[in-house]
Length: 294
Image 1 (cartoon, rainbow, N blue to C red):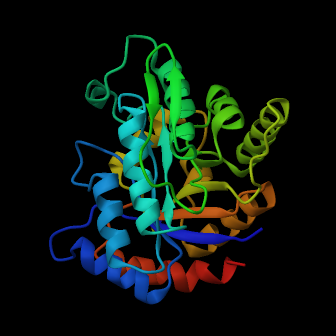
Image 2: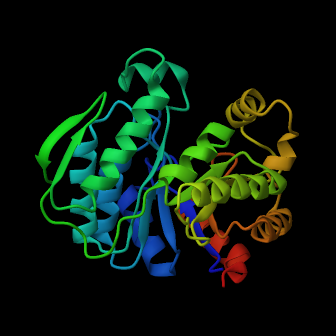
């Protein structure tokens, strides 16, 4: 497996602007940059941030980790993705999820009550067709198009990764996804997740590339931000926070090796508490974790 380590965009502003951060990542050779979707936080919109970062760089890969799909029209999402993929071949890494991390933001991604998962599945089916076929006719419960096209298609296939960790999400990846970007799972849970995904994919006559399994990993340095600690405790009350957030670089290296043994090979690293400089943190990531790349 090709082990690769990227970083999260996080909250970049004030004395450190996003353009300088992207330029630094490009210069030091970080593999990838990932933008999360949190509407109410001082973070860039993932598509806007991706566009800016891709336009500033020649080598850096840029992904969404994770962007909400239900509540967006798949035709418009497909148009945005293929436009970026044509402009930056092989560097666009879309990852989609079921719903926002903050429950009250779900109103911004409106779907029929109780049907979010069904809308997600249908959106994925239509999106996959639109980014690969020159003309698409589709008659679904939520979306219908007749000879729809998004124009130019990228020369390289556009892989669509998905987030999630519950069984329904893992099964969806097996049916419809090209990869998995997990979060808040232990190495043992990651190994089990891969087994579920691969089993469902086989049942559906599909193969998920073994290189397409990743995890978003926060690293603590003495403390974890109170907001993150509360969020982790709420989402995973059954797991000790240090089983999900390693403390210090040595613990992070050991944890990444455990994930690699479980079949995970792509990593999105972020600090578990605010940092003085994202650029300095990225340089530390490369120095401390870069040797783990293969």
